[in-house]
Amino acid sequence: MAKLDIPVFAGSEKPLLREQIVAPNIHGESGLEGANLPEPTKKLENKNYLEFIAENVYSNPNEITLVAVGPLTNIAKFTLNYPDLVPLVKELVIMGGV
Image (cartoon, rainbow, N blue to C red; front, side, top):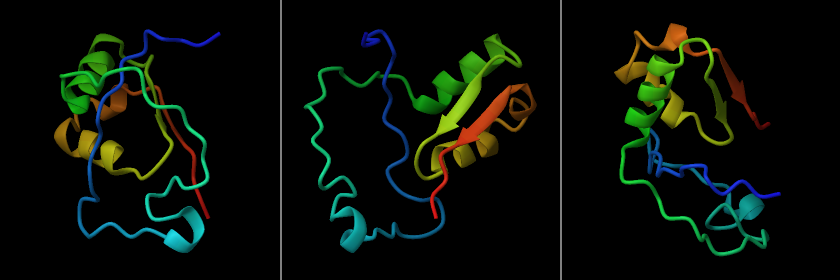
């Protein structure tokens, strides 16, 4: 059964220190060519994703698992902006590539 009450946030639009590099010969121009995804039906939350992560980690120390399924820019920004909260994250799970 689909879980429909999960908030969705816009993350970072580009890498921190360099221009974005894509592999259009592998993943297509957008990085999602070939995937038959339905149009989104859920609207993005108005709150900043960093504030959302920080509030949840602060309110639930050692209970929050961060899962990174793409570039790690959002995780990097969290650690730079909230270094005091990093030790309160239970774990970080990364879906790494090649």
